[in-house]
Length: 205
Image: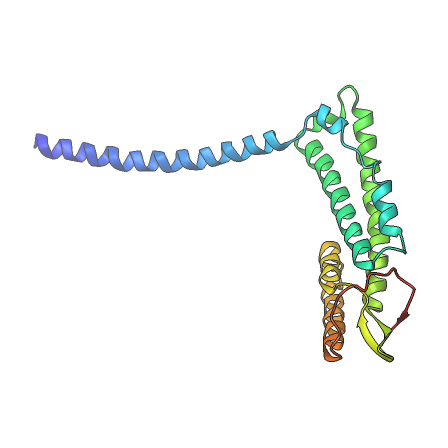
């Protein structure tokens, strides 16, 4: 009887021990998630160093019509993603720590956040306008060996990346147009790659 009771006690402790470990695991996950969220949230000092006012050089590079269009589009992609990440950093930090908006020096942080939001929106409009221009006229005609051939205006993979980055409502339709243009270039035997010249110098098709 004593042995049976001892065995039952061991079984009970084993079962409850497993249950305790399972609960502890869940609680530990919650604690770790919270800890990571807090750890990853910038403090006021770090946010004070974050700005979207230092992007003029990158924007001017993207606007330069004398540069290859693939390079220009990649610059727009990189700049837009950078601005979007900075804006998200401000928004997430203030959501997780609302006191950041009310402490000393908060006006500068709020102003920097608003500047990032505006800059991101402005660059998106410009970026999307350029992307749609390229999708509308993705190929050009060029004279090669005395013959007129159709070639890609830019690297199609970069154009797809731009569409995916912006993710407009008509994303699928835009990607379909790029695929059609790529097939057209492949059918005439011309490689789908940037020719190295800026926009507006050859006849679009």
